[in-house]
Image 1 (tube, rainbow, N blue to C red):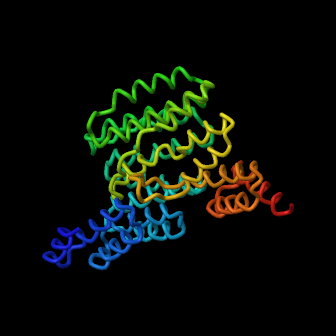
Image 2 (image 1 turned 180 degrees about the vertical axis):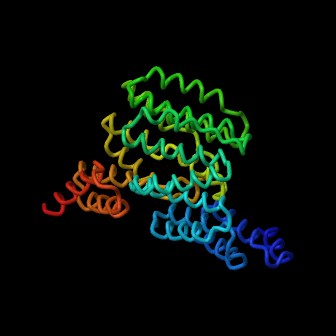
Image 3 (image 1 turned 120 degrees about the vertical axis):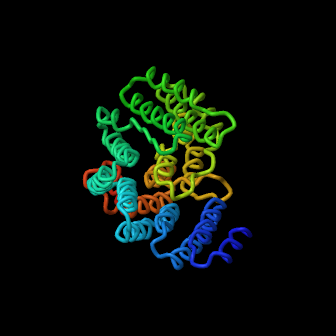
Length: 347
């Protein structure tokens, strides 16, 4: 921080030192301080890239209306096709995160068209990969295969991470298709991409453990799944929030609740609740900077309801429905949450 301050003092009119201070606060978990520094950077250079970072932090705080406002501004004021494409990628991602699949497709298509105009294969692949998760969410597993063939050329140092992400993603598809042995083979692939002593080691090891836990659950090895879930490797430090492709991939898998599901299948409702409660709280003391998926609130509310904790169940059904208030019609979780909430409110 001291050197960033010196940098700012000798470089008046340069937004980068303030933006870098924001990054440091982001890594420290001081989210409000990070936002303040990013805004200082924008005061110096209004077209600096800090807007998308502010958007991510507001999303981390589950303030998606504010997150999208910043991304809208970032996209609308883009001075280059690359920045505009980046904005549409984020818009598509957040739309998908909030259950707005139709709107997400529109924005991802805009990102793809801009990427094609620049011959940027990385962003074309990233947009297609996000679409793959949309197909996965809809149960359209045959459409996932080509979409998950993630090949990012601009960051060769991260090739092991992207290959691990690809195998993790396809391993989940294998499980949904009932192909447990194929999913197991993906574990061997992921393990081969774990670079020892690298920043990527924790990233890839955590994906390996998450897929292993899902494989064990699918195969009925509940106690082993619990053991693996309790020992999942730390996820490692998040990438700086201006690396869109890395940061979106960092949030994969979107749902990381394998331990909570294992506890539940093992008949331990209290531990399952405790695990979901951890997943919906931002912990600045941990390195992880994962976004909190809205479905966690829905799943936690169901467990509170099962436990007989009516007020807590109502709180989290309402939270989920508020976050997904503009979701596409016909999503099962939304319909079920509305039905359950109405039942609790009339009791």
